[in-house]
Image 1 (cartoon, rainbow, N blue to C red):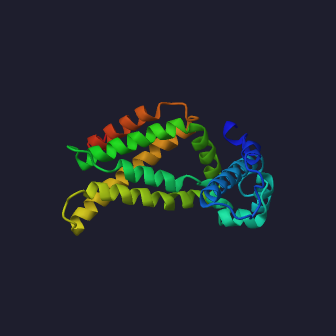
Image 2 (cartoon, rainbow, N blue to C red; image 1 turned 60 degrees about the vertical axis):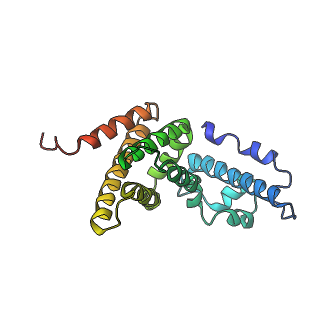
Length: 220
């Protein structure tokens, strides 16, 4: 799998990769990022070979060329390596949800989600690899839902917009955010089950059309 083949290249770029020598903050940050990337690549390589459940952190650290101690400085568990970009994706969503002039909350959310669809499409190989690992383990499916809650809360804040913060307004925003979140998950699932070959942005537009039409045809 293309996502997994460059682990050794990462290591070759980091002389003394498992060294604890003092270095300037910028160098330390770059080394930490490189080590983390090496761990992620090693983890996904082993997940593909052995499966998630049968892979240990010791094996991941060894393949990445790191000691067990260094590996656990970077992550707390192998589950963390399954979702390496969650914080960055949440930050990206939060950035995209900043409303532009003339936008309604609904149009802001639609624009943000379609922009993320373009990002995901560009990252299709990694997305597909992650989905296969998550689908293989019920605990990972549960963790993914918990992580998705942060994104749903960001959508809630966007739908609330400048409305007065009342229980009714919060409930309305929560219902809308839940609907969008569920629709996005369904769309991503369809895309990934198809090998991530379809145009995700087109699927996203179709999904938002369904949402905008509401439940009018539910009895058909």
